Structure formats: structure tokens, C-alpha cells
Length: 159
Image (cartoon, rainbow, N blue to C red; front, top):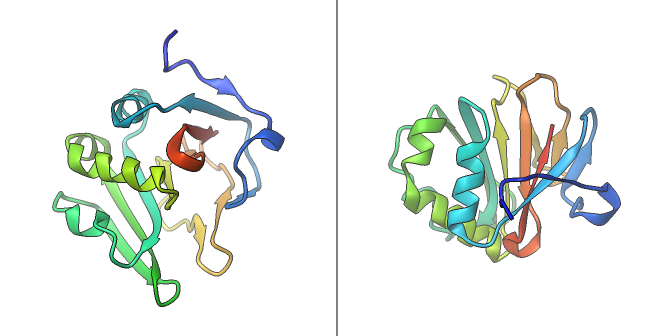
């Protein structure tokens, strides 16, 4: 069976505790068995830019690992032990950074909250630091919002 075949999901059956649903067409999932299948999914999807949003422990290593060129970067303290990091990359530069992709997958595996926006709209805020939720409000034809199931067993794609 091809891991890249999407499965249409019923919202009642998936992780939505950190998601605020607005306007979208559907949600699909892709099985993720390891970092290689995760990289395959993000490589096969069509996009030019990717926004990486991570809520993590302040001593997490993702931010320190990033020595690649990024379009923008924001960090917000959430409390004494957690912060929110948001970075935007171009697809080609992002996909070349295996260590970063590996760290994203490992963080998702231990249930740090990670989401990605494909073709993010400039100036649009996707994560509400007060509620800790990602707003799914698809405005563009190619805009996609991705997030992990607990333990990184699946990745969901809202379009």
C-alpha cells in the first residue's frame, strides 16, 4: 500500500483539541511511521513556502538547530517553561535540512504541538497564543494546514 494515499477523516475521530475550525473543505490524513515517511509526505505535497509553528519546552533544540535561511521568525513566551516558535521557509531550503525535519518529527513523537502551513498568507496569524489553538480558516486554493496526531502516528491536512 502506498503511504502517500490520503485518507478522508471524520472530525469526531481525530485530534482536534488544539484546532479551531473555521472555513475549510475537508481533512485528510497520511500515515507517518518514521521520519522518512514524514519527509516523503511533506516532499510530495505542493507548496512554495512553509510556516512551521511549534509550541515547545524552552530548552528544546529545534530553534538552535535552525541555521538555514528562513524568511521570517517569531518567538513568544507562553509561560515559564514553554514558548511558541514560528518560522517560514521556502520549500527547497526546508527539504534540504534533514536534521531539522528529524527534530520536528521527534518533537511531535513526544507530543510537542507542531503544525505547518503550506503557502501561508503574508501577515495572517494562524496560532492564538492565548488559547493555544491553530485557526483553520482556509482562504486560498493552495493554502493547507497540517498537524500531527498524538505520538506522530498520522499527519492531518486541512484544505
